[in-house]
Image 1 (tube, helix red, strand yellow):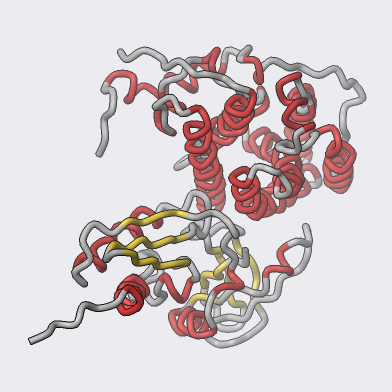
Image 2 (image 1 turned 180 degrees about the horizontal axis):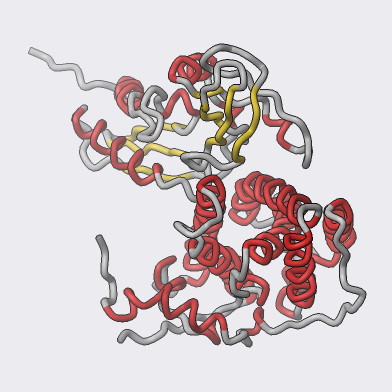
Amino acid sequence: MVTATPSDADLRRRAWDAAARVVDPEIPVLTIADLGVLREVDVSDGHVEVAITPTYSGCPAMNMIALEIELALEREGFAKPKIRTVLSPAWTTDWMSEDGRRKLRDYGIAPPQPASSRRALFGVQEVACPQCGSMNTELLSEFGSTSCKALWRCKACREPFDYFKCH
Amino acid sequence: MVASIQVSETPLVLYVLRRADDALILGHRLSEWCGHAPMLEEDMALANMGLDLLGQARELYSYAAKVEGNGNDEDKFAYLRDVRQCRNLLLMEQPNGDFARTMMRQFFYAAFADIYWRAMMTSSDATLAAIAAKSEKESAYHLRHSSEWIVRLGDGTAESHARAQAAIDDLWAFTGEMFAVDEAERALIDAGVAIDPASLKRQWLKTVSGVVNEATLSLPRNDWMQQGGRMGHHSEHLGHLLSELQSLQRIFPGATW
C-alpha cells in the first residue's frame, strides 16, 4: 500500500486554513484573515512559517495572536511553526474584507471608512450607528477601548458604540 | 542591582536609539496619567497614545539591537541604560504638570512626529521606512487629538487659557532640539537614511502657529533654545523617571511574568 506524501502546496493550504481561523482576541467575530493581519504562509520541507503584520505598533493582541497561530498549527500536526512579524507594507483598514466589515457591523462596531478621510486635521467625520443606522452620531473620544477603536454615541437611538478607526 | 550595558554607538545605532528613547520616555510620561486623567475618555486616550509610542519604541530598539549585533535587545536598551546613555529630546522628559502642560508637550511633538515619520517613509533604510509608515498613521491621530485640546483649553475659560499659555512659555525652549542635527546624523542624511529635520521646520511652525492662533494663545518671541538630550545631558527629571521605569529589572534582572 502506498501512502501519498502531501505536497508542500497541500500542506500550505492546510496551514493557511488553520491560521486563518484564528480570531482577534479583542474582536472575536473577526478572524486574522478578515482583518488582513495574516500576510503569508510558507511551507518548505514540511516546516511552516507564518507572517503576520501588526495593526497598531503597540497592539497588545499581537503576542496573543502569534501564540494562537502556533497552537492552531500544532493541532493540525505542524511541528514547531515559526511566526514572523512583518512591518512593510504597513497595515491599513482598507485590507479588511467586505465580509469582515459586515461581521463588525453585526457585532455592534461601526466599520472603518476609507483611509483617505483621516487626514483632515479638524475634518468632520460621518459614521453610521451600527445599531440603528442613523447618521445622527457624535464622537465622544478619539481613543476607545482598544488602540484600533474610537468611542462614538448615536443621538437617535441614544446608544454609545465603538467605531473601528480608519488607519 | 544590575549594572548598565555598554552600547557601541555607531551613527546608525545612535540615530535609532535617539528616536526609540523619544518614544519610550514620552510614552512613559503618558502612562503616568493612567488612573489620574481629568475624565475617563482622556484616561483612555493618554494610555492609548502611550501604547502607540511604546510600540514604536519596541520596533526601534529591536532594530538598534540588530544593527549593533552585540547581544543587546529591546529590554536591555530600555531597562539597563543610565541617564547619560539616554538620548531622548529634553521635551519628552519634562514632567506632566497639569493637563494643559501634558497636552502642549504632546502637541509640540506630534506636530513634528507627524511630518517627520511621513518624510522618513522615503528612507533608504527599509526597516526605518517600514517603522515610519506605521508611526505616521499613529502620529496623525495624536496630532488631531492634541490640537483639539489646545484649542479647547486656549479658547476656554480664563483659567484654562492662562494654564495653556504658561505651558507654551515653559516648553517652548525645548522645541528647537527637534530640528538640530549633529555630525553623525549629517552623514546619515547625506546617505539618504535620515531626513534633514531642518526641512520640516517651516511646516511644523505653520501647524503650530495655526492651532495656537485659533486657540487665542501666542508663541513666545524669544527663540533661545535649550539642547542636550541627544548627547545624554538631561534635566533632573529623567533620573526620577528612570528610577521608576527601570527599578524592577535593576533589582530583579531578567524578571518576567
